[in-house]
Image (cartoon, rainbow, N blue to C red):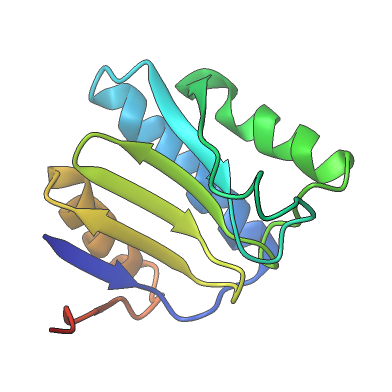
Length: 126
């Protein structure tokens, strides 16, 4: 299983990556994904990492609504979008992660390389 991260990028670029993941999932005919929030969200520990199934076409508006209600802030809280074999994370540190064995991982590494987001592989610690 591969895992890659980008350098920190600004909010508009993070939002563009969220839209790009939705487009990529749609292109694979994936209709819904698990969405959850983690570190630095305004949720109790019991509510963090609690997945909700969201239609791929609605993920951007779901995240925008979560921002408008104060649950998360893109670039300052972990936002996870997950499907079998693929995990996409907008990190609380302002970078983006992909992890898994799906071809989507490679797709995003190539995308980020072209966009000069300096993707790098995370080595699994034993």
